Length: 87
Image 1 (cartoon, rainbow, N blue to C red):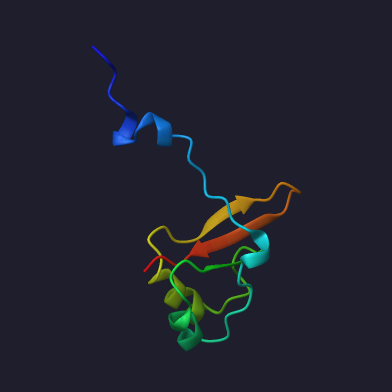
Image 2 (tube, helix red, strand yellow; image 1 turned 45 degrees about the horizontal axis):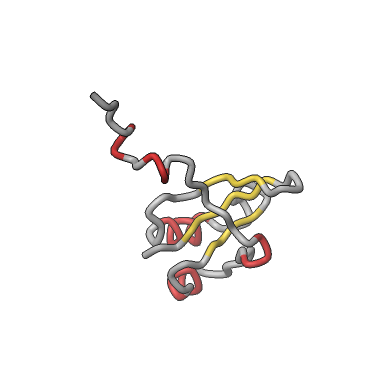
């Protein structure tokens, strides 16, 4: 009998990773209104743990994301904290 796939993730997707064009990361969001106006698919972030965004802007961004803030490592060693807007 075959082993079940972990957590229902097909084997062909188990190594799936998010690849982000670093030049497309939005690094400045001035207000909650601006955060709400960003298009679905936008990636917002910084290299300071998300601390360059106010709490109000961060909260507005979080309501638009299914996965929340995440750290990504660029090939040149930079560490970005990003949020993908998918709602």
